[in-house]
Amino acid sequence: MSPRPGVAYKILTGAQWAEWQARGTFAGAPVDLADGFVHLSDAGQVAGTLDKHFAGQDGLVLAAVDLAALGDLVKWEVSRGGALFPHVYGALPLAVVIAHGPVARGADGAVVLPG
Image 1 (spheres, rainbow, N blue to C red):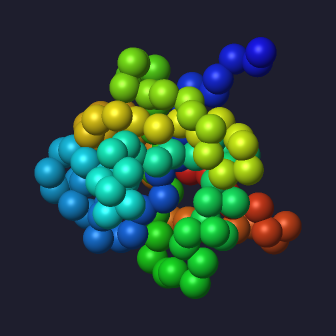
Image 2: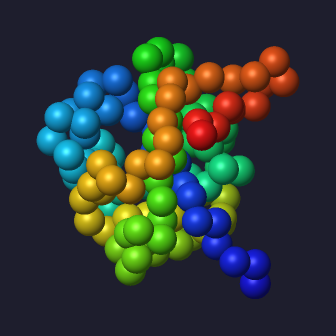
């Protein structure tokens, strides 16, 4: 089994990102609160998550999250297509964000990751 990546990504609306910055913690978007955990994606999953759940939305922010800083709050669980996704069972402190930026795609259509 290959090691899990140390960084995962959270796609946020501009308002959610502003709230996270203002409060210093992020308990989750409505879907996260309903599911009981904060949904994240690894680098290879970001484009699929963006296309499936955020199609047509503007002003999105992509936050890179240091998973090691979250320790046991992170659980890799089966989700879309049987793939393992990082889920965080707890609020995300702003200190775990190691990079962030607007959601953008390169000329090849790939999502440009922050940092």
